[in-house]
Length: 61
Image 1 (tube, one colour):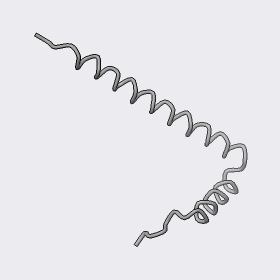
Image 2 (image 1 turned 60 degrees about the horizontal axis):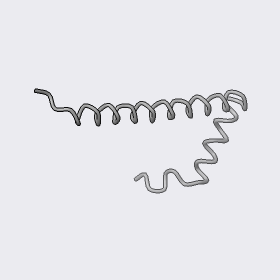
Image 3 (image 1 turned 180 degrees about the vertical axis):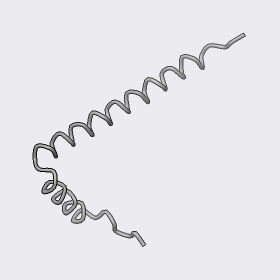
């Protein structure tokens, strides 16, 4: 069950249907928003790791 669910041809069909439903302009803005969200998530994760490294180096008395 679920084997080969996301083969390249299936993904092309999904993208094609999404393009028909949303149209080219909405599809482009959806991709832009998704990219910005991923970028913000990565930067937040990096900031969290930096903050942990700073807190881990200092010992509290």
